[in-house]
Image 1 (cartoon, protein in one colour):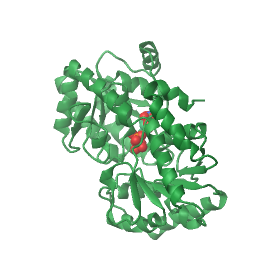
Image 2 (cartoon, rainbow, N blue to C red):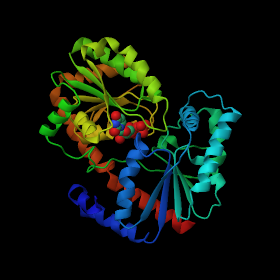
Image 3 (cartoon, rainbow, N blue to C red):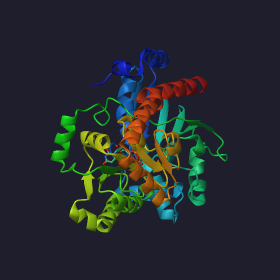
Length: 404
Ligand code: UDP
């Protein structure tokens, strides 16, 4: 099991010492995180790493996953989409399923902790079904820059029951919410199998095992199949780049149990990409293996994140940590994750030609790609490693528990 001390060679004594000092102030405190999936997507990725380290430093931290029927997750995916600006038919049936599932979950989830941290919209109304005995924090990972008005009015009263809301970027601050909104950037774990150093030999073995040829430069997008990740736009970018330079596109994807939309979009994109798929120039690789994701993000010449909405794209940071330049959309939390023209390129999400131009530039100019990769790694080290995230959480917990 990993321990905070393992991070000392990466971040240094000052940061590790500071974490222990803060953790001492939370001794005997018991915290619980609640979200809606144990695997797939960024929240599960973060909790898998964060919860263990919190326990290691002496802050008892638990994790509960909301259980619900498939229909519930179809409804909450619609809520998620509407919160990111999509349309929704907010029927009574949807609202009832949302509330009933949380009500049921509240009956078999006993909460006696000193602080409760609820992630994303799925378990948001749980607070309504519990007698509140401690501070509750809503951690919103969604890009709420332009939510659909109807869904926003519907969920706002649940948010207002909380003591604080955490958002991933200052861009998501809402003027019409009367509670403290604090920015905490998500993070990556440099020692997880997904992000740790691996040898060229390991990369070759993994590529062989998963059938990824390396005779052409690789462009990759590592994402769930989600409309907001714009997999169709990725294909259009690839088509333009491919006309200039021979290369291969890899869609590395996984499915999350709380996102039933994935399979539908996967089938749609596979159909659209058929021509390239048959020639082996577009690959669909199931990324349920951390070392595979690691190898792919490391070996790709460019990683794309063509999202049209994004709270904070972990994949953008993961790729930069591996020294791979990223071309990503200038939306949501992403502009805080890339220093434009230095660690990667930010492009307008509608600008397919502009995105293709930057990808092609990086494929051609290896010196530029290498330098961007180098700077990207430094930038991630200074801003988005898990030790920073732990520090931010400890500071927040000390504040919240002292003031409650
Ligand atoms: N991921 C993975 N395999 C895949 C696709 C994605 O392990 O095939 C991981 C990815 O590496 C990242 C997380 O899932 O750690 C996705 O987080 P992100 O913030 O990029 O997007 P989200 O899915 O939360 O919208």
